[in-house]
Length: 186
Image (cartoon, rainbow, N blue to C red):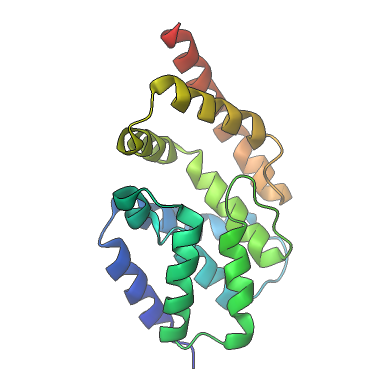
């Protein structure tokens, strides 16, 4: 039988109190009630939210790909917590499609994707981007170009109607930040 407490414990152990990941996960759960429009498999969404960013500390430390790292950890954690085998691929799909360019094919993956992006474009999400920029040791102009691309893609990135509505002021905030950064770098 699936043990939610064990899955949560494994995630908490992996993220070791990383502020950005724990805050991000909490924000995703908080926003879930705001954007869910249809019925969905709660176990899949619960696991998808918990696991889609679980690789962030390793990504930061070892300059790894977040999605691939999270997928590898998720497979292990789902088995350890006795997650139903017939739903594992659905959780992995949620993780695989949770990024900005994701193309979720299920309601559960749409929810995880939109929840992830809603938080990524918040003030705390921007702080996380700055920390990633610093850890990657890339040029500020390259960081700006990445954020300009992200800002452009955000207008078409959300799938659920409620997430699109919630995202409008956040996209405006994010775009304003990028525009101001570009002006100040000239």
